[in-house]
Length: 324
Image 1 (tube, helix red, strand yellow):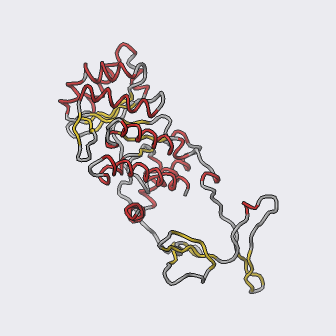
Image 2 (cartoon, one colour):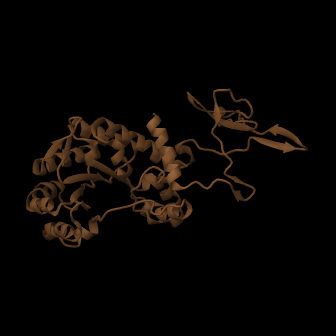
């Protein structure tokens, strides 16, 4: 729940930036937050559950266990996708003096017309890589390949580094102006995967847009902060007993510690209702005429009564975003 909720609110923020600075926000949003979290979680099971939860909101993931989980349990032919992408060892294995050859190999292997290929570019010196290698020595190869090359800076202050990378790429590859007056780079994009969380994503996008660059130019990879850097207190989540039946009599069950009133729990049989003002928890049976219950019986006495597909869940999520 917490992974899906965090991913959902980040999707809201990215969507807001796209709606402000891109021509077609909804055609881009699905691949703007990529799951890099598999290696940072406690177990394969954590990767499965958290990775599948993220896919409620996005369609990009390198967490194969999460993709398998969503495919298997939520009836998806293919829940997520990825692209060929270099990581540091596939660059540094060539040696510092052959950095350009490492990048050239990525182009040779994967840069086909219409394809995307990502390449981490800060193994040694990001400015040299972007200005002199990608932007000069390899510039023509990038353009003639017909692919979009996604440059990944991976160190430094994220808002500053992303905008500086956009500016350096702009100087070499140029841009077009979209209908909203923001710059969209030709042939290249940027993905930021270091220091990514909800706060830094907002800062990165705002700083890029302040420089005149559309959010279309930037995607994000989020690792441990997406799947592992959270707990019950991240969103103050708790599940507690609220009512019992003893000798055929229903009684409320709740806690109300004198030493911490903030831990008081809800009492009685409850319902979650949706009104024009949002969601509200009320006593069962106390619903007003203009409200409707948001609760459904999904599992009861060992039987799965509702078996939603991933497509159905995604449509429900997107409907709430489109209504905002």
